[in-house]
Image 1 (cartoon, one colour):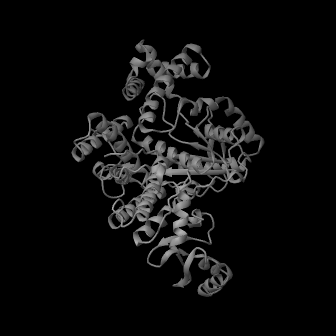
Image 2 (image 1 turned 90 degrees about the vertical axis):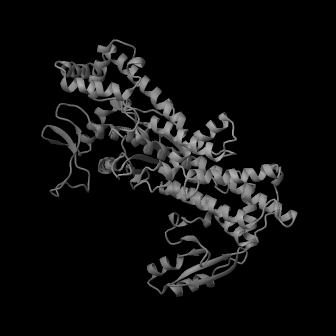
Image 3 (image 1 turned 45 degrees about the vertical axis):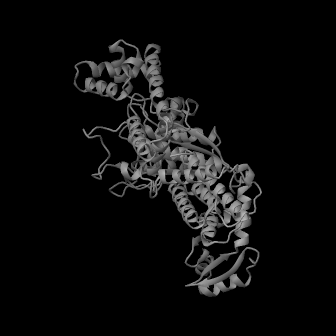
Length: 565
């Protein structure tokens, strides 16, 4: 029953929306509003008909109608207590796995380019994709992570030629990927003869020349070392086994073009082979072309993305494919998806989800840059987050040992960095602000982590063995207890809603509201000094379920907790 009372239940049924609204009742449903519109009847009359046939005596003390037809549900405190007690004994906190509804979901995220440093822009794709993968897996789906590395293209001619000219080990030459790439590009643009040699090297690479391929593999291996360092530090679940780079799909590209031709979708335009996905128009209101093969026979990103999607659907048996990329690629993926539909490669039963995200902005509300105007390296951002968090922790709790401070600073700093991104509606740009993201108050990771710490400190002070709380009778008497109980029961609904909508900020909002509800409960309902032992045990049980929910919710965001701060 807990899952049904989530704030986003409308995602499952557009006619029913239950939302916590203390002003009107524990939950407010708009079922009558939706039905009235469909039936062409008065909403209040429809609401009354629903109430006449509604049997909720076991769970509600009162149900009434408000406004134009809203149905207010006032839950019984005994029912709430029973539901929270059920959560306490459920290791999944009410999130059920329904095998018959489980899907194979392929999530495409991160996707950095070989021989380039990951930068702040990769932060969003990486952590949003990681969170969605975690949520989908926890909701019971089979998740296949795909890291679509950019490891192919004309730029590798100049990179490999630059590496060969240096005549040194790859790891020494490209210890700083950004400098290495910049040097190769400068030589390509300015050095006589280098560009011609770079173009010939591309031909050698595409032709399978083994010495060239050997240098290419060195570039990939060294780049992965950089990427994996960032993934490990961030706590992102991506490994080399998840890599399906652009080059992986090379062998499939000719058949993509040929099969589009056989399907009657391919048109020659100025020597190039193009498709016109249904529904796309250019500025002249004419059908918009998407090139899949250039006049010189070369392929483009669209060709590779078509091949990748086809592979995921046909070989990986995906029921749903999720792409987490920059919002500026919206038209590209829209055209790719439509082409997949037009060609019959993505049947109606397969969901194609584009998950766009906005830009990270600096204080000037322009794209986030270093003080010198350069690109912000992701690894530098991670280290700065840890250092700044360390300063906050030292000031707050100077008695901690150096090792404790270092560990807590890493957890808090990285958590703050991730949460600041995930708590924003992903489609919007957001302003990067160290002071705000590291604040111990407000909708921040440190605030949530501190709520968890507060509960652990209660257990330490009271010398409470949490195992002793199993089976404790939960009581919901005080208003603050009821507010907390209601919020705890919403967790499963929120997880389901995020798995469906692919909007991580909904989980962040829920966790912030839960932490706030617990702080209110802590202030108004003494735990260790409760009036009697039964109340003490009940409040300890409520605290334990809250800590578990915070920890699980933060884990789904890829954020750790600590027992002290």
